[in-house]
Length: 65
Image 1 (cartoon, one colour):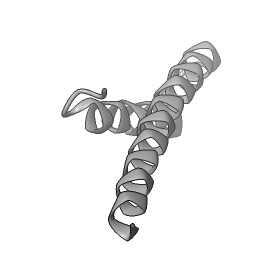
Image 2 (cartoon, one colour):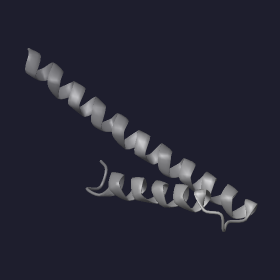
Image 3 (spheres, one colour):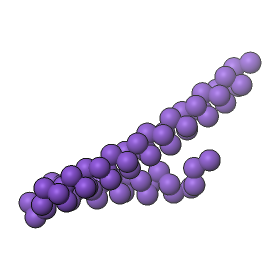
């Protein structure tokens, strides 16, 4: 089960990495590092959202019966 603020934390990290990449004061190596870390944060967000979607679908099926 996801922690209460896990999604918000991952989304905030993703935004921070995106902002760093957009800045003009970043080296190529740092941009690549931010991209890789941002991709991991993105995957974490997607996983949490998919889990939430499954829970909602499960409860909707139960309520339809």
